[in-house]
Amino acid sequence: MISTGVEVRTGRLESMVEQIGEAVLSTAETVECLAARMDTLSIQIEVQGKQLQQQGYQIFALCDAVQSLADSHDHSLQTLGQLTQTLDRLTSLLEKRQGVGDRG
Image (cartoon, rainbow, N blue to C red; front, top):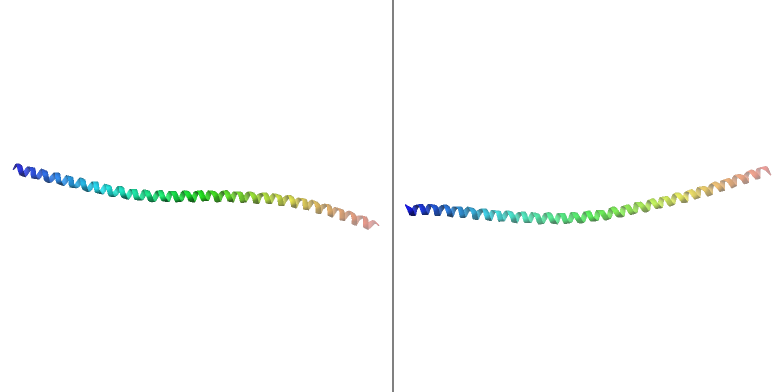
């Protein structure tokens, strides 16, 4: 009877050790899977970071282009204003000459 009791206990211990081994293997597989997913996520985050940096450069370039366009527009408005003043003076001079010519 003692040997039967020892055999039962040994069988239980073997079963417990087997279950613990299976749990350890399963945990190791899960950790490997999670590590692979973390690697994939870190690569995706790195790629997105580079994309954001590139977009930042593009936004900066766009702002610079808009500023250049605004400066050019201001210069064009100034030139147009000067041209308008010159045309007004020419028109006035022509009107004065026509007035003088009509009298004579």
